[in-house]
Length: 341
Image (cartoon, rainbow, N blue to C red; front, side, top):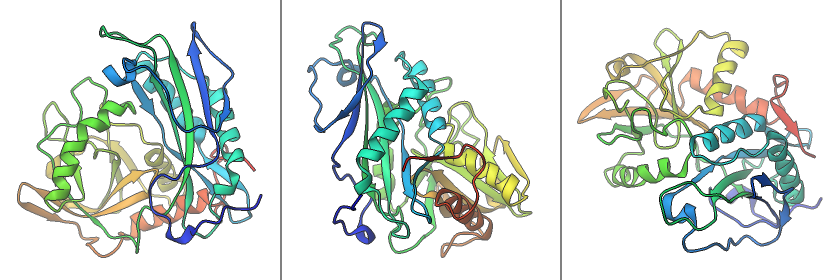
């Protein structure tokens, strides 16, 4: 298929409407077969549950062109499973995993002309989401739901090269103890908007949220998990019931163990340990790893030895290995790559 006439090298990380999107509806206790549609607009009641009580969950993943010209996605079965978990947490019906993956295949195939070419630095970002659509005025879950999946070509998360971030320790809690912090609910992200805006206004790139119960342990940012490297080369990630189970983080942990032979620990990480870390990064779909160079804790600056100029050596190796797997340059573990075309 001939590609769209897009300046792939200068794409930003923003929305561009593509030709097709997938829609499925849940009514009378069951999902319909779903299918592709042309219209990117949604029509619903002013009293729709999603508008009144924020009953919605979403996912994010990417399609890539590999070195040998295939169009692939990375571990979409885990996105399907994580979305099912989010739906359980929000009293929404689970979309069958097979239907999620079929929707992905249909969507990416129909929009293959928008999948950026290999080596362009761009990818096709895919956004699945579900929401309560029928009118609800009393506080209760919806009865009818819509699942949609759209895609948009995006440029690299970092423009002009990777520059380590400056993070502040937040006074605001991202999630409540025993709350919804471990599911990908839209409401979690809404709660972080004011705080991230404030952080940017004060010269910080992101917030470091602590555990909401004791405020002594590192959790995550508003949209990414943390990954640390100790001074003796051990990879450490926070363990908590109120952080999102990042697919990227779990993949990086596997890469660290099985590809790079590193020792890895998933455990509680106390704020007091930050000064002893050699490297830090934020893990997520958009950038794989965003390096952190400085953490500011109420005026106290914690400068990581990896510095503010580039990724630390371990973080860089993790990044290069995982992106190499995604792009087909490095052999992937079985089941990690789904070939679409």
